[in-house]
Length: 496
Image 1 (cartoon, rainbow, N blue to C red):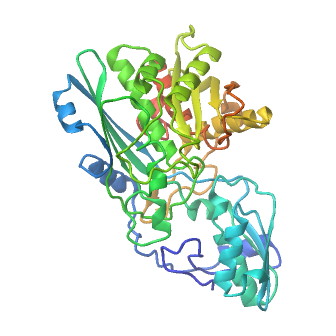
Image 2 (image 1 turned 45 degrees about the horizontal axis):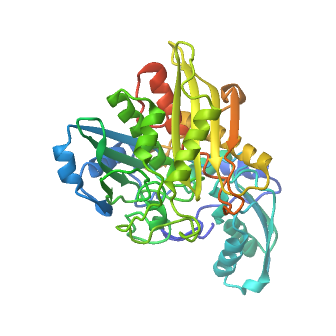
Image 3 (image 1 turned 60 degrees about the vertical axis):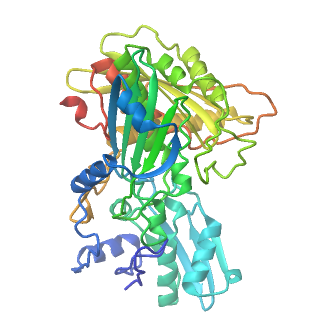
């Protein structure tokens, strides 16, 4: 039996039964014949369909105000037209190609770990605390990651190995299966994003209210956490860069029903999807071009002050060096439009979509060209992504990161759902939780790096490419089919 900790318990094991064998195959066979009666705990009734309805209900009521400029309520009431979009994103699993694995050798008050951990310092600290041994007696050897995306920053699998080695008095290798990984991940949060945009008679947006409802990562660390942390709010909600007179951002409460953790791009994914999809909806409602609508909303080149936002999260960087500069955001939109030949003629059944976002103090814009046939088959013909990441050193590495982000963005948009019924994850492996295969990948992927003044400080590259992909895809699908998709994954929605 593996010791478990009551939830929430950071990255400590949840507890269970371990099968010890000479090799992995024998251990799996031994586990398969066990008959165990599990206590499914406080969230045994967790159901994704019912919970989505709860989040949607919360999004339709006032929530904690986290940014307020002007008088949104009055502006919405006096608007000539109000466009409302409600966007849903399910839990995402990291689904690393190599599931978690760790080797531990604990002898007395000394421990040595070999594992593909993204946070060796955190692993070192947690192993020492869990085993109650001096930190200087713990050694962590970091192996090749095999994919991480944030999953392997949580060291529960290494702690399991350490506890078993201590119990057995011998080195132990703990190997999770794909099923284990999907069933017991620290998932990306489920989210409902509701945006109301008020337009005047000329089609100008004069009011913007965004309610974001999602369980917080803080729930993994402390009981009762039901509002987003400043670092989550600062990922596309309170830092929304549009030049609109009346803006209000709200964060209704949401209780976590499973373990929530960091995931590549974090809360930027649902916020960018909602905000940039709404840009597409406004463009359609006003009969205007998507790119021109986006630039109009970004407005004049300026640095955002955000006086009404408390504890503005800026990715740990000083705001003086890394302000929210709408001039740079405008430029990256214009740059991708030029390089990607925005507005070009495309065949019948094809569509172009565009989206832009600032995250990890970088500015990025993406154009996607798609086609959808009469059976709902989606083909991504071309992706153009432009990034302003400040001063850069290795353009090939930047290109590879953004090419990979296009693959991951498409995979999440098309298939990325983890759902619950009776408290249990419904997906098991790549047969019912696919990732994009080579024959579904974008046919052409172009990366364009915006040249900057050499004094511009460098900024993030690994994560910013994911958030604008799904909304650019959704906007392209709308251009091709006239069908507005407000929920991920798009899955079978195109065939209906």
